[in-house]
Length: 179
Image (cartoon, rainbow, N blue to C red; front, side, top):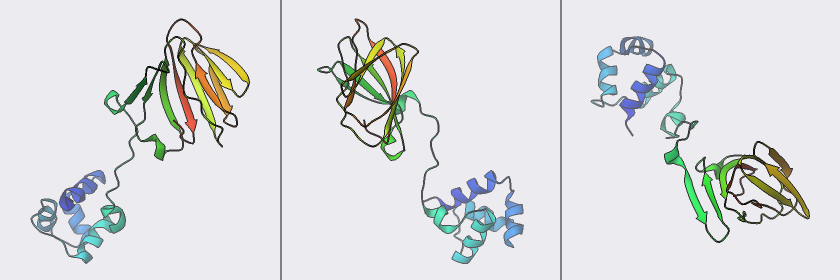
């Protein structure tokens, strides 16, 4: 871990100069400079003072937790195709299994369908971007076309199918993650 670099990053986030940080910690500007360049290491007591001044604690500082990712790009997408079912799934939020909901972009070829999903305690939502799909919920069928959405309690076996002659594309969200 780059302790000095992380201290500098926190200092800059707080809009403090090295001198301001040094004064608040009763240290010299030169010492802060050396710590940030990893030329010297502070004692535990001094590190605790620096971290307190920077608004954090030793646990959070060393946790290594990455900041929450908010924006995802094309390179983040994971794709899986199943020619037998005539479908492609793009996981547009990677590692969504750790989240409360899991959105996917699903493309169904003409006659294609999703896997059958067993009942579970949760909900689903979808928005059709292109084409027409049928949501099969137990023994009921619901036709949904471009620009329309659906929302359901997942208390029955369900799946989507494309009954049209053109590709269908939709955003499908499951909570908790289920895809």
